[in-house]
Length: 118
Length: 115
Image 1: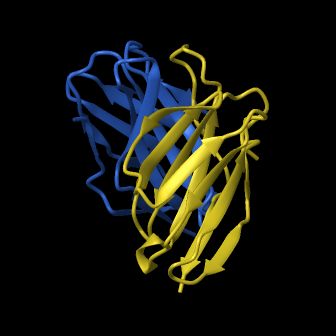
Image 2: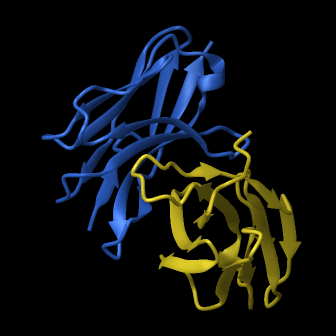
């Protein structure tokens, strides 16, 4: 079964600096998606960025970028120019196939709490 | 705003009771997913519906059931509630197409407190 591991329960960064959140996963599949979701204190789950496994180019969304190392099964999130509004729980998620059809279930990591120091 | 709506936002009830949580997916989305998030934990997948039919089941208790209606809104029914059922319940929707690009968008969640 697929698993997702976020080894950093909590990270802190100074405002305006860069921070990297780590995520590793385990799978025997070659075709899948990886996601980072952000959950601020409001508890809303917000999509930050997604990566397609068959694409070698790392995904980027403004200040957010990923370092996808497929062979190492690593999917880290880099946040540049950290802002106070970035403070949240960040969840890494893997999307797998269910019942061998085209429906996909998200497998979630335990989350990393990101603290932004002003 | 993800376009997914959930009601109610908060729900307080007693053990043994039954509650219904409601979700309206984004316009055009055919798939609805239900998740449970207990305090300080990740999300547990409960169940998925696609265009009115159950598509996949996760860690959903027998006391819980769900359905998706012809207008595509979905309801999650929780019965014989226990203290441990207190959690944040999320609904997410996706287009439901077979394209791999589909992404799940989450509603704001319903906070359930069982006393």
